[in-house]
Image (cartoon, rainbow, N blue to C red; front, side):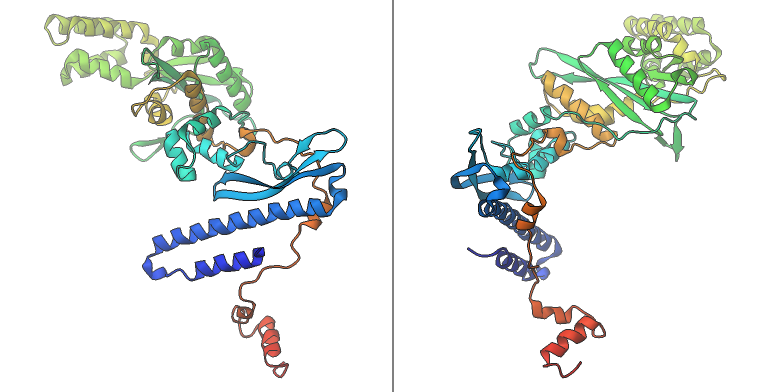
Length: 452
């Protein structure tokens, strides 16, 4: 069997022989294939070297007896299919049977996909379909059903701890929901979204920035429990909630308005986008009527808005149902409109609709797809975790099992490589500058010591 040095030399020579004139892109792709092959060969060598070290040193596996040898194992990794052989051991006292090499390398029994690749697949699935995630991370070697099941096993995703920002006096909550089609075809549902942020900063004429933005979602959860989670998060990020002034922005839905009951010192702010849509429908797009309604809102004259709306209904500018809906909407959310013009408050602008489109709709509902309850909850939760700056790590996919034997220093020494690999040793003469001591030394050796 070839040594790892020979295998590495062959692969590296293949990389060096690549013709770059065929184009940089195909050359890099070919180099990556060979690099992946090299990684797999090195991993195979190290696993089998570990297995041999355990066989040669009985003290390192005290109490464990070889039951089978050369048992093959295949594991799909981010670098391709890794194949190696190892021994199957039995404990003479307990009768327990284990693959000690798999134990020490953190490879679980019956595991077909390496845990690092599993984490990559799950993280890709927050932005892409299950099938596309498989194609991006494994070249399509993993089925979409497997990707789906792996995402549902992700647990204990946590963000890095933060210091409470006790100097902040005002925060905003953008609240909205995404309407999602379910796979059974009989119903649709909503996924709630709340974005916590500090006062908006404008970047240019159209772009706005939400400082310290933190996203939270809720599915199949009582509304009061969700708002209590939001309150806990505010307390964690900003300390005592009693000293904060909090604005809840939204379209006036019942669950959004109820947030003022569960969040202390909070006020509701109606999203102008939804008001503008209704104003355009009621006025039939007439600019004078629109301007009149916005002027009356600023002056706090709700009765005049009702009168104009009724006139639009009577004259056929809008149908009765549209006009009545607008009047009811204005009546229910008048406090959220008047706060726009209250100089004692800095309500700011709302952007909940855009956030839902970016955070939820782009993955959950913008393309034709149907969801099951478990998958919808999982992907929405993982998506906001990643958008909040979190990562899906191997430890989030599964908990590592304690190995049957310890990786002692004696074991690490037994599998250490004493000889370091060098590509074409004589070529080292050409890698150093002519004035260097290394060059002079090797040049002197090459010339029989006559040029020192």
